[in-house]
Image 1 (cartoon, rainbow, N blue to C red):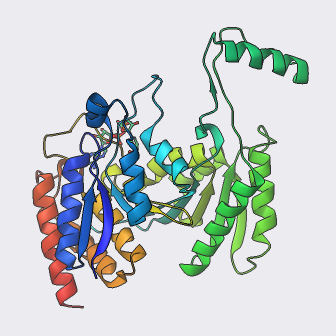
Image 2 (image 1 turned 30 degrees about the vertical axis):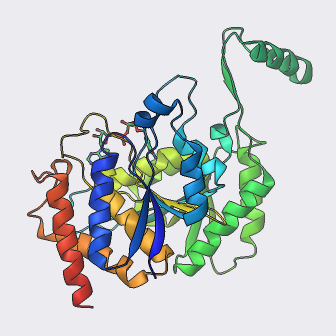
Image 3 (image 1 turned 45 degrees about the vertical axis):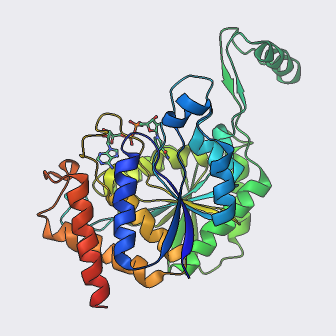
Amino acid sequence: MAHRVTLIPGDGIGPEVAEAARRVVEATGVEINWDVQEAGAAVTRTGGTPLPDRVLRSIETTRTALKGPITTPVGTGFRSVNVALRQELDLFAAVRPAQSLPGIPSRFADVDLVVIRENTEDLYAGIEFMVASNQLARLRELVRDLLGIEIPWDAGATVKPISVTGTRRIVRFAFDFARRNGREKVTVGHKANIMRYSDGLFLFTAAAESASYPDIEFEECQIDELAYRLVVEPETLDVLLLPNLYGDILSDLCAGLVGGLGLAPGANLGWEYAVFEPVHGSAPDIAGKGLANPTAIILSAAMMLDHLGEAEAGRGVRKAVRSALAQGDVRTRDLGGSASTEEMAEAIARATKAALASS
Ligand code: NAD
């Protein structure tokens, strides 16, 4: 029976890379009925909102989506569609593998990391106070009364909630993931010495929950030191468990470790729904030029195939990506080549057919 999947092409390079992923998924022979749902800048112009209800309703029906990146304008009143989707669908866990790929030049040869990012809390929860607003004036009074701290009159403010419930579920998710995937260690990144009641809670909850997983090593590391370790000794790390903001930042760092944003896939998972998307954004600098590397969303689609119970197809796509990259004759500009998005997709689609025929 065909799977039903919502396809959100997104903004910028989104439609180009989403089409590439669709082509590769088709090459696996797995039957998918795509429900294409536009969201982002294009629909804002016509419908007034970047995330129309129909997009959420579609994912609630299909339960699974493949998504291209969506632009978030800087400093406007708009909530990020990406953040809104994760919160509305309670996609509390982002899973972002960073693995060295054959023939891709990078500082280290054998990187094999997975970032597990808490996706719904922290500074991304949307609790914001605009500079010079009435709300901020009341917040200043409250903070003065409660803590004797003076927030500067010309400050804006963002609140960082991290809950025991939200932390517990992501910690258990990370340890279960480690166990299921034969991983040995989970490293929690934090700044608990400074943010004692948010990062501190994350760390202590993680430490307590880790006791239920004696087979997986638990390690804690301050976030600045973790960033340093990632760029000098990534081989000492395995699964990284991070609150929302640090997870966002270190996901891009990990993508850089293995050759760039064009190669880094991701999944956003909750108890009920799953949205697969690359780590990268809409890359307006190269949009519409056929320059985007589709590998990240293609690898995201491979994760989606695993999730749909099509593990053989997922393996086939990953094998195809490795063999296409190892051959090295078809590469997009970010990888030092001159192939277009479409040519790269075609090469991976061909390799997918070959990989699945020989398996
Ligand atoms: P970006 O990831 O879009 O681009 C950063 C750099 O990487 C650019 O030079 C870009 O050309 C390059 N790049 C990214 N993806 C590539 C690919 N597939 N192939 C080749 N090169 C690629 O980050 P940005 O410029 O900071 O963000 C642009 C927009 O995307 C912003 O509005 C941001 O909010 C949004 N964004 C969305 C998501 C998402 O939808 N999940 C994630 C990150 C950023």
